[in-house]
Length: 160
Image 1 (spheres, one colour):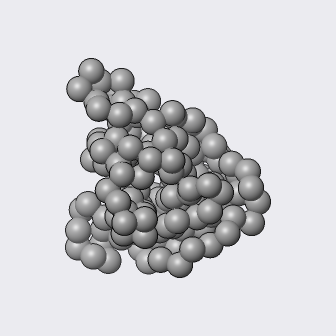
Image 2 (cartoon, one colour):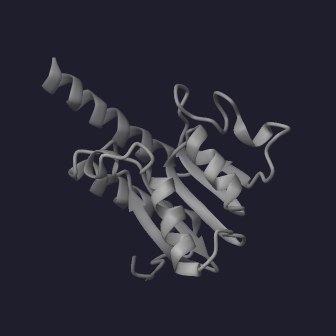
């Protein structure tokens, strides 16, 4: 993954990059979720879902950027890094975020069915969670939710 500089040094700029990754995932036929890992205002990694492409259920956008971030920084600990993701992380991704010691999590749309931060198991609130990042939800929520709703509506029309 090449390092990119953020075009706008604000939250919406990083979320815009994550949304672009979600759109790229959608173009590959994947569920449109994108993620961007940032440290000191610099994008360390950016990617989208690749579960279909790689035949691997663990290749969610968050997992992809956490792996790439660890490789780029030469560490399993991503302390000082912030993660921007278009959809509330699932339990697997929330656990990886905790184990990676990510400083802050920003996400767009909530996920009442599969989310694990503000919905479901609420992973970071668990007494067994070793590290909980600061969490900020609703960043770019409308755009992220719209992208997902449109994707699933189109899938139902094709399958229906």
